[in-house]
Image (cartoon, rainbow, N blue to C red):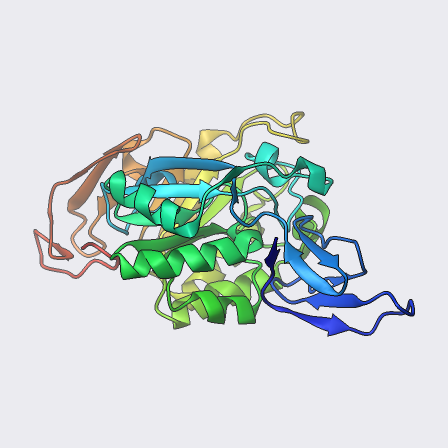
Length: 340
């Protein structure tokens, strides 16, 4: 068992039964003895918080970086991707619910793989980075931070694909090793986050701002769900927020397909995604992409200045056609991203 990071003892209302307060994420769970937090993978055992999923690796794969999705970070490279079970959200539309949604600790499975072995696997696969993804990496924080430190020593970059619900303390701890993140900005509504994710919007917005302030490369993804988070006025507010942080943040708007507990909702009409991207373009966002769709206009990267095509994409196949040393080959404009 691995002692968890980022918790403190908490005065229990039950004499002789020590409680703890976890401050890994914005839930700030107060956990009685022999209970777990909302994530179901951090348990109070005799007043000590234990990470139940440390070195229980449930999934690994050497993915194209574009699958994260990251379009302005080492395009065309591969990222060794890993996950354990667990999540601090309860999204009714979760696309990886077999990994993230667990009800009891007996459901936590995975292969015992050490941080050193994970880094070696990444190097053996020729990856340029390691991605902590598939489930929510915040809840396997102990495994992530140890792996990330070793990855940095071996000239590998580190990426989080995250819901952005980590605490400020957690971000401070991981940020020295973190190079990039794709953050799910699931909606711009507190009601949506409460009713469909079991969480709050505001902490996610704070994480986005803090990561940008720390110089971590950030891209955002919104899964557009018909009738739930696709109201044009709400999307305008979401776009305005991104603009207030940085107009160069790439925004990926992805097509919803029926999943988990939302099988009664039809897939997103592609035109709704195109309309959202066009609205963002008109409002001033520079780099806009459609996800779960094959659409050339919203797949390729164009220079925001002269509109020359810089990177072509077809599915996960990527070809750099007019980008040199991070600059547009046609007009010389610097293109925001991490290219080397």
